[in-house]
Image (cartoon, rainbow, N blue to C red; front, side):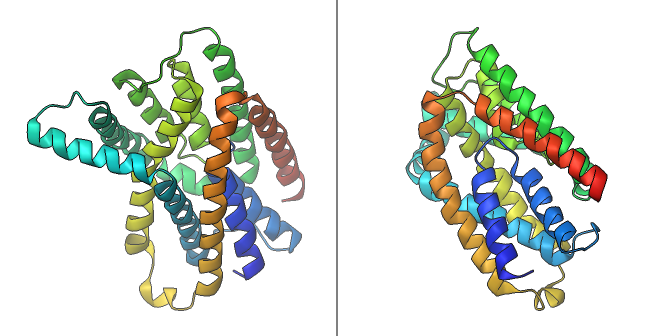
Length: 280
């Protein structure tokens, strides 16, 4: 792990976590492209690389928390008030319940796929195929959204389907933001509502992975040998780029089609699959 690699992966994570192009897939591509061009074998990542991936996601989590700090506080306060009054009719308290329920469903779907997801990290050609599938999901979501009436509030049905999509997106190449936004559009949410909910529902999942994983799988004695300077810089870069990405992506998605990201996923996915099939 060096500073150039850390900065590059921080930029990739900050952009791809919130754009519907699969952050985990792009981290796999970036890491393995780097290894190929350096003449290194595509082998199992070291614990330092795995921990760095977690820290990059923590950086983008900070970006979400800062950007949506007002909405997050409104949801928390509404939930507290509803627990006191036993009245959950408030819009924000409902949203909080949907996020909690969605987190449970996401974990239930994602956990059984953990081993598969870990193996795909070393199979970038397969991840490229999954990215192509994400592209077609985005295309279809745009087609479908034009056929149904839109709504500006998340309901129970849409929250459940979005949670299922988020669970499936545990596989690298299946974009979490892409699949959740697309599922929101499938269920009649307007574009901005789907995107904002996609970001909010990601918070517990990223927080859980960032807090739990290091204590379960990282050897604290080994961690003393990590390049903490590079890890810190990469995490900071992912947070800064992530914040800017959220800000401008929300403006984009409110007005424009996701099809451009669909084309990107298909092109990059095909190229990556061919490249790693031939050269890796």
